Length: 261
Image 1: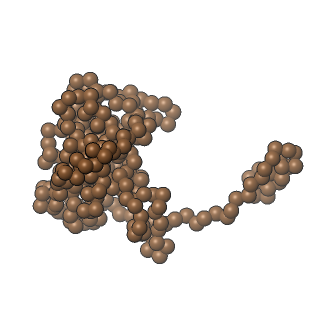
Image 2 (image 1 turned 45 degrees about the vertical axis):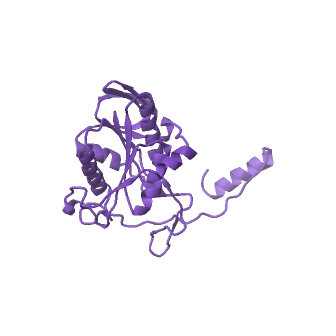
Image 3 (image 1 turned 180 degrees about the vertical axis):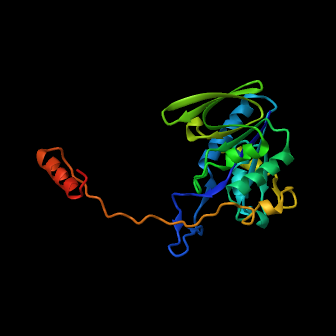
């Protein structure tokens, strides 16, 4: 079975700050990580590989050359091959253009059985790229997967909903997006790290991916981010301790002052 996992290197949102003048992310000194949901997708692929002899896992990402670190981490976790789509021509692509580029690269890889992506990236939170890749490829898609069971050429997935879950079946090939409830990603091993740096991360530039230049980058993106900002911090909260009548009375009075009662 040939499994493909789409991952993204993102800034660690615990460390992200915005420039108050430009509204842009301050990336200097901010560590980059594999998008968390993408790690769940990778773990799902690795488990399928472990249970199905002869299966392979190829990791695909689009980003700058520094994403090589994320690709090496994926290889150290157990992926067999890593392909990084990187080039100035791809810069500024929105989710639609990005999905078009990645889907075109996947068509070049070809002969895949299952594509796994994270539900959404923590730097954009759009949850659009995975489903758009499926649409570009013309294959079935199942989103918000919290459980995946494979039976021959059929996959059964439990989709997480707000008030429960939905069971969906699909024939391969299929694209599945993963959520954190799906699994706990494995750690890299010392041997895995050593082997990851023995392997080559393939770099596919603009000349290697047969895309229409009019459909990529800023020029090919039908959407753009108008403004990014951090909400102003609210005043320091006040803590009331105790459960006696006076504390409750004080709480009621303060809520009434703010017209919350």
